[in-house]
Image (cartoon, rainbow, N blue to C red; front, side):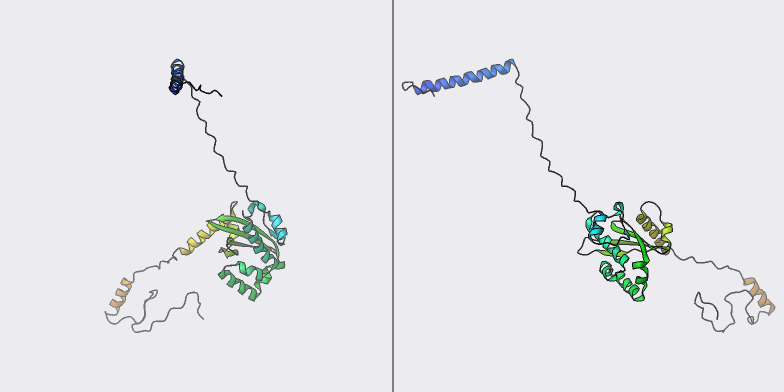
Length: 269
């Protein structure tokens, strides 16, 4: 490291420093005049993308059936099963209760109106006759419809098929299933790959028909004015006829009592 001589005036050192600074600045200016200085663009670092969370692995239907000891007659294909594991377990346990004829396990999973109907079926013996050993297989199909999670099941009982449609909610502390109305001969009216959507369409048509006003049949009208005038002239314009003209509805003797109409659908005894 060089040291300024002791006998060198401070002013000379300062002037020399200023001269060097001016010379350096001049060199830069001359260089700029002779050739443009290319300034490299500032490259910004690419933002670090957060890693996407790995999809949650959902247990297969086969794994869940083994884990929860679901009756093998409950047939829920993987491609028609719910998306979440919670919903899958709820649906499997629900129809397992039917397959085993276990009303005690089934009741807590039903809505209040359906619990009331179940109690009636248990009391009458209908539940025991149509569940348990009577069931050969239960075909199950899950889908979302009109914002609801739904499950359709077809019970194979002997030679017959018994369809059911339920909407359910498995997001709470306990799943709840609510039955959907079953129109007559619903299986013959379903079409397409999504039978749950087709079921709802049939139901809408049935409800629309029920809301239509009943047809009012038109009664045939006949003018009896000329007949009444002829009868009056033959009697000399006197008293009313002793009997109503044949085929004239509503005619009766003056002062005769009016009979009460009979209820529709009841014959004469």
